[in-house]
Image 1: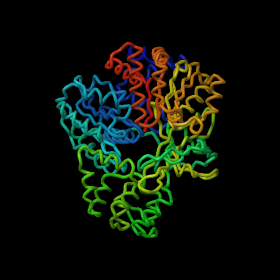
Image 2 (image 1 turned 180 degrees about the vertical axis):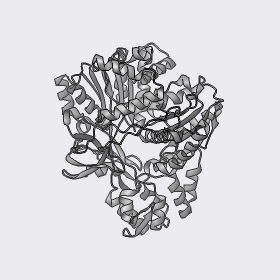
Image 3 (image 1 turned 45 degrees about the vertical axis):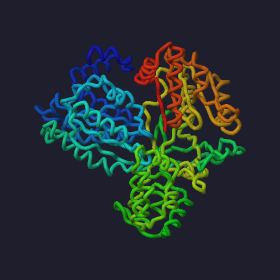
Image 4 (image 1 turned 90 degrees about the vertical axis):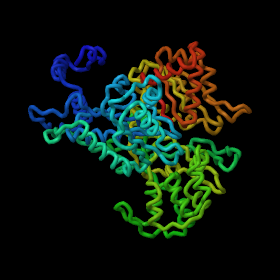
Amino acid sequence: MTAAAAASAPPSPLPEDRNALLSRLVDGLEANHLWWLSGFAAGLAQGHPPPSLAIVPSGHTEARSDARLTVLYGSQTGNARRAAEQIASEVQAAGLNVRLQRADTYPIRELASERLLYVVISTLGEGDPPDDAIGLVEFLASRRAPKLPELKFAVLGLGDSSYADFCGIARKLDARLAELGGQRLQPLGEADLDIDTVATPWCEKALRHAREQLNTTAASNVSPLRLPHPTSTWSPADPFAAEVLANQRISGRDFRPPAFGQYHPIDRQVHHLELSLEGSGLHYEPGDALGIVHRNPPALVESVLQTLKLDGDTTVSHDGDTLPLAQWLASRRELTRLSRPFLALHGERADAGDLHELLTATPATGLAALLADHQLIDVLRRWPAQWDASALVAALRPATPRLYSIASSRKRVGDEVHLTVDALRYAAHGSEHVGAASSFLAALEEGATAPVYIEANERFRVPADTSRDIIMIGPGTGVAPFRGFVQERAETGAAGRNWLFFGARHFNSEFLYQAEWQLALQRGELQRLDLAFSRDQADKIYVQQRLREQGRDLYDWLQNGAHLYVCGAIGMGKDVHAALLDVIAEHGALDADTAADYLSELHRQGRYGRDVY
């Protein structure tokens, strides 16, 4: 361990004799050996028996130290991280020298000396980078980015073609790396929600290129260590059946907002769910998300079948599975989210010139509007066309789980996990629509089960230093993780103060967890609570206005080391970000650029966490 590393490391909890042994063990180890050792120790910490250790024969190394692949990822929901981990694992198994880095932990200064770089990055919403890659994207776009004439690179983008700017961030990075002089090893990969369709062949080519570029034959001499997967790891493909312990509606019943245009919400219904994780082995921390493997609404499945005049009992074979058409539509295919590939195929069948124009127009404002408020049934009714069962299953995008911010702390609720679910319902195009996963959850009765798994969110955690203050901004169901934060801080006896900004449309019907927040204030578990209810007066008031009103205190908290968190819709996150910039500029007497740098530095320090969707 270097002197610098030792100086920056936290105090060791080990006894003095064990500390001496550890120092002897790590002395002189190279970086790849230390990474291996950290994974080995993590496996032991999770309670897994140590695997057999594969010995590299004397005289052989995994790869030359100056011939290394860096796999860099930016991930919002975990998909890009998993894809990057898979690439790194396969490269390591081939005996090649590889390091895996999350974008916000990557030392930017090293970019100029990289020779082989793979980037795996998701695009958030309409062309935004994932939170952990904001700094990297901004740096590469800036004039400070170095020339990269010796770099060879490849980019794999993950996106959602229900958004107009599909894989937009990956496209920008791919183009920018080439503009800076980098040599593209293979074309940009653009993976939709059925990730493996594109990612698998892309990764196969990437492994071949890594072998060629690193020019090593070490694979025949190395048996890399592989830690066993924990037996309690549940996943989207193999979720845990969590029993529903409670399902309570927590929004009022007496409010129906006025209609506006063709698209308007109907009587908002927010549910608080409590699920049992007993026997699952699943663990989570406040800030993590719960993945839900849902089923589509039966009424929607029936509407699709009737509109296309198809028989739900028709057997369809696809990708090795044979199921009745109705089952494909209920659990294996997306019915509430559209994709451009399906729209293109449907436009051809319907001979719909106006649909083709929407798909090809620049800018794609018309397409974005269609993707935002049309479901499959709307497209089938607006542009009638003939589909047979097999072709329909092949054309529709595979169903994907939904992620919900966890609204509890295990330290308080034990083997339970709590959710705050807004059961999406809206009127559009002459009929009522519902959200697939939210309506599935809202309809669950006590004793029923929900297929679930945990999606970790390492960048959205309460501070390890419990003396730090925290500021939480969570309008609507964005308040969910902060319920878990406050529970966690109370149970651990955190000395730091807790400040919550909450907003909704109406105080009477949508003040979520009102009694809990009031009790938390009384107990001293919550020190400050600022509220904004937008529709209770003539002038709409949102949380960003409260941020500006409390700007002096907000800035003082940040100056004294507070951590800042934002959770909710992407649009809200942007508005809150703008308000924070105004607060920092005004009360820090800074210009706009310096205020932006201030907020970016909070992000780099891990003191500005966002969970936006």
